Length: 178
Image (tube, rainbow, N blue to C red; front, top):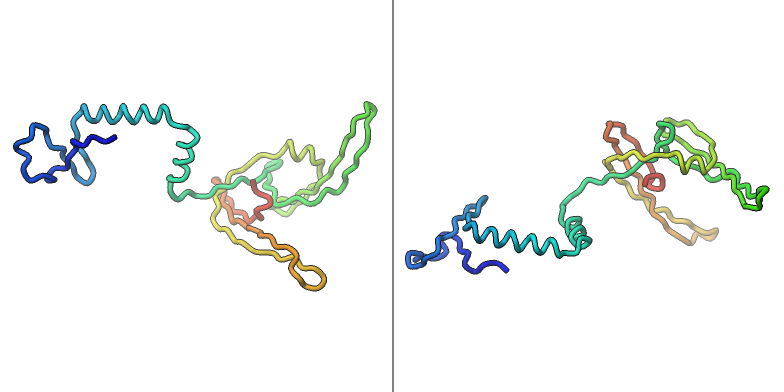
């Protein structure tokens, strides 16, 4: 509830017969009585205290304006991962205690062109994230056709050109960023 007594200077022609002081305003400043400021500030604090924090965060996200897009690249042993291939082996066996164990091996390709084969478990536990700013985003629709040439499915491939905060630039498929 905003006080109805707030008036902009010049809004009334004859202000002499009123006991209240007019409120001065300009494009950058509004001058109001201290008591009115304290009342409005108290009201705002009460509303913020009782507000739903999740909805406040949602409001802030919606109204924060244009935001630069940041993605995370995967890094293993100091090298940025470009892609990973299908699992080479998936050996499933029972161990001596009767538990099923899997031994999965995947192939990683790094941005420098090198490849490395490793156990999936070691990969999943060993990578770290490298934040990077998205500079450019290209979208390409891929159509999968059957033998007669009919389109049976479609999917979108998004390729990013990213720049790390250290200055390195990479081009990477959206499948391999987080």
